[in-house]
Image (tube, rainbow, N blue to C red):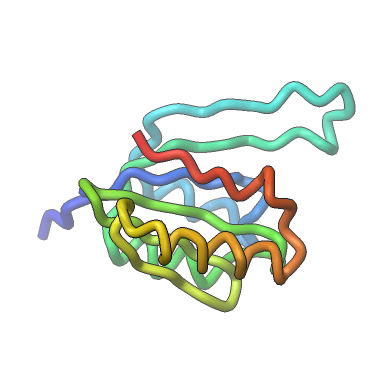
Length: 117
């Protein structure tokens, strides 16, 4: 059975309890941030994922201050450790709710700039 990996996503490796989950995804790109201290660098994977992959990943977020997001066309799925939002990327009210929620759990506003290409 061939499961369609039709969502693109952005996952920071350090946000995962078990980074081996990345092995099940199609990696499109890897960006490593440029902090001098290696312990402060993030490994940002851009991936193709299925809805099933997204469900598994969302259950493995390491801490409340992390999130990951996925998109397909206008559909966006944004996963925090204890909450998942699904919305249309043009829905500014839904986007504001997601940002407000992220801020309420301690994520800095500047880190809530989830890109979608």
